[in-house]
Length: 181
Length: 247
Image (cartoon, rainbow over all chains, first blue to last red; front, side, top):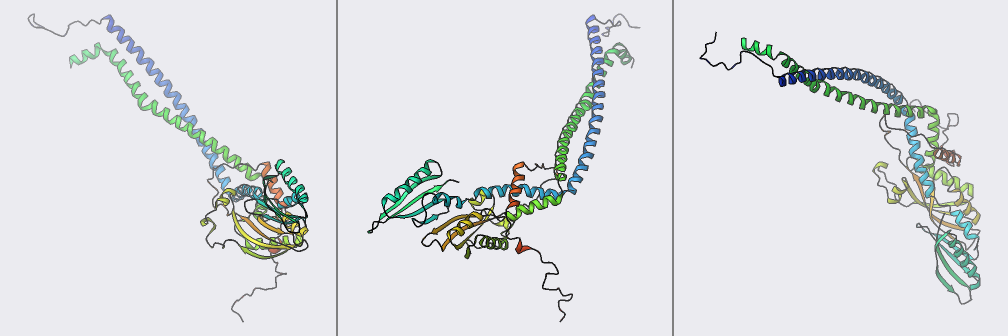
């Protein structure tokens, strides 16, 4: 029994204010919603985890089976990769070959021995023709033919490198150009 | 104690709600979030595995689309054109065959550079070789014959199954019945790759262009074949001895 002259700070009667009730109800509601969400999410994630794990396990089994199969075919793979690599090299090698017989055909179309005395081809694809003729008039068709080939883009950068008239009237001319194959 | 009981009795619902929220929060932090991470990781692994399986399937279908012997034969055709080493015997045999076919006489063969005794992987490629993607064995040779024979040699040298290229030559037409041409030539060769890559490295099937190239190469005459026909025991003039040291 409390005496009248004492101060009791704890209220003898608890009265919940309406604000407190609202907070409490809100917390209760939020807590349940949160719990339901967590439970649903947990269930969903659990299902997904099981599903994906089993899928991954299947894929791993499948992969191991294929890896074994590929390992058994490693000789064939070695041959195949070598074929792929060598076709690339062979293509490049074929591209870098020059059909010089075609050049001889083209040159013989406008000058032949004995007028054509020399054909020189250097490593830089420069072709030097040494031509001798009885007169300047015989050289002109050859020069015109080389110019025509240059205009048709068969020859590049044609030059009359030297021109010499001997005492007997013979002409010795040197033409140089690069061929396009 | 009485006070605590009273407190719990008054705030029971509030405490339960807070506890539920707390438990849900802990479940989210320690359960849901890590599981989401794991599910995402498993899914990513599955995607990678699916791609790898697709690569392996393609690889198996390519490798099993033809017999291994077919691949070996196709490779042999290409290797005859561009061998894995300098292969001087096939070089000489092919030049000899070319000489016989075109009717020219071959003489004064000399290598431009001395043949290295280092392994092919240790040899530094020249810029020209790097451009082509193949090693080059440069040599010079003198070819003698009439104009038609020289022309035939220059035509056929590009169409034999040991790849050569003519870099330079000098034809003097002083006497068209006996022309002597000094030629600078290269023979192609390329060492084999020593690794085939990882099991799951992708394999691209041969394109139509590549198959046509193999056919084209296999149709070229192989002039060094006769030089390398293995002798059978019946043809072999030497009978092996059982005991090498027997009298």
